[in-house]
Structures are given as C-alpha cells and as structure tokens.
Length: 261
Ligand code: ADP
Ligand code: MG
Image 1 (cartoon, rainbow, N blue to C red):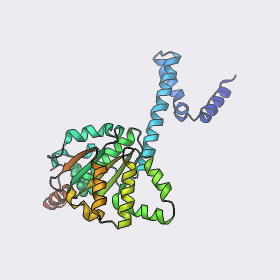
Image 2 (cartoon, rainbow, N blue to C red):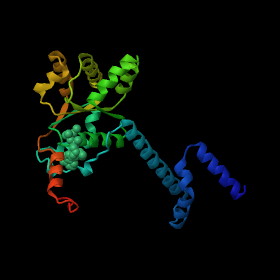
Image 3 (cartoon, rainbow, N blue to C red):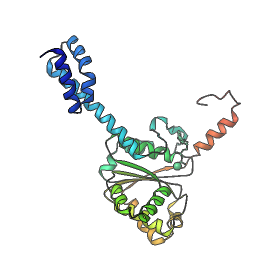
Image 4 (cartoon, protein in one colour):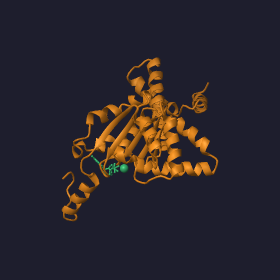
C-alpha cells in the first residue's frame, strides 16, 4: 500500500473510531518516540493516554457547562485570611468529594458577602472535575422553575433530571420567602435528594428563622431534618468581603490602587 493511501485510510478510520487526539497527535508522537527509541507498545500507550486525558477534559468541560454556574470560582482565588473563623481543613476535605459517595450534605451559613457562593461554586466545580453530575441553582430560581414546570406539565421530567444529579447546589436559601406551593415543591426536591443526591445549601439564615421562609413549621422541621441528617456545616461569620473590598477601593486614591493591600 502506498504511504499516501495508508495515511488517508488511517485518518478515515481514526475519525470513524472517534479518536480525535490520536488523529491530531500520531505523527508528532511517532517522531518523538522514534527519537527516544520507544518500542511500539510505548508509542501506542502514549497515544492512548493523550486520547483519554483529552476525553476526560472535554467531559469535565461539559459537566461544568451543564452545572450552569452563575460565575465560575475556584478555591485558588479564595483568601482564607479574610475569613479566619472558617474551617479551612474541612473545606479542603470537602474539595476531595468523598462526602458525595456518602450522600452527605454541606451547609454554608453566614452573612452576605462572606464567600458562601464562592465556596459552594468552588466545591461544585471540583465535583465536576471528579466526574460528578452537578447542577447549581439559586434557591429562588429553582422554586420559580419548579412552579413553571408544573404549570407546563413538565414537573415530573424536571424532577427526574434533578434526581439523577450527584450534587445539587441551592444557593441563597432564605433571601426571599416562598409561596406555600413553592415551599412544598422545594421540600419535595430535597426529600427526593435524600440519600441519593448530595446537597450544598448556602444561607444567611440561622435555623430559628427558617420557618419564616418556608412558611410552615411542619415543613421547616421536616426539611431541616432531611438536610441535617448527615451534614457538614461551614460557618463564615467574618466580615463581608464585598464590603471590605469596596472600602479598600474607596480609601485608595483613584488610579493608584495597589494590588493585595
Ligand atoms: P456570599 O455568597 O456569602 O454573599 P460571595 O461568595 O458572593 O458571598 O462573595 C462576594 C464576592 O466576594 C465574590 O466576588 C467572591 O468571589 C468574593 N469573596 C468573598 N469572600 C472571599 C474570600 N475570602 N476570598 C476571595 N474572594 C472572596
Ligand atoms: Mg451568595
């Protein structure tokens, strides 16, 4: 077989087999392996490794997209010094993701601007990287969507989608009170998640005030019971980072703001 024909066939087969990284790398890697005097098996192994790594990276990107984070945040940009009372060790442990194997939940409590959404996003982002299916919602938007889906008779399908998740983030529970129907639908989601899907919930509300949001003592009790059955609690009770940032910016003369100050 002529070399040109072999090349055309190989490229065709690699496309059919859906091995884009093989296709992209096989020539370059052949040259490298020749230079390093690697045997055929090593060459094949290295190609397979490239394909696998690319495939995992693409899958993680898809999971991040499907999770619909409002803003992408990771732990690299989180300043623990700004939140000294926060249990850093627990954050780092949770980042490894074992809590999801145990279907445990995470509750982030603290005032506005203390980094709860940032941390919840960082944990959920790490879960995406670990191959977990994740979805991020603000609690209010989830309730709105549940009510809409019910109206459109698509509630069941939506609930099934949520049930298939390994991690569900409910951000900012407690900022807006729910209607009775909304609270019941939300409770239903949390009930279905029980021992199936891990939840990360962020809230600015102490437990005593949850009744006001859910509207019913009975519902609140049941909800807290489900949520806190197996839960890791992170408390950020330091000053608002947003506020501190704004103050820093105000103090710094315009155009002369220094980084890190
Ligand atoms: P919360 O959800 O508790 O109201 P956010 O997570 O939305 O607070 O934080 C507000 C802003 O401040 C975000 O841009 C976030 O990235 C940033 N931020 C908060 N805490 C920290 C921190 N400790 N280190 C770095 N950035 C922070
Ligand atoms: Mg928030």
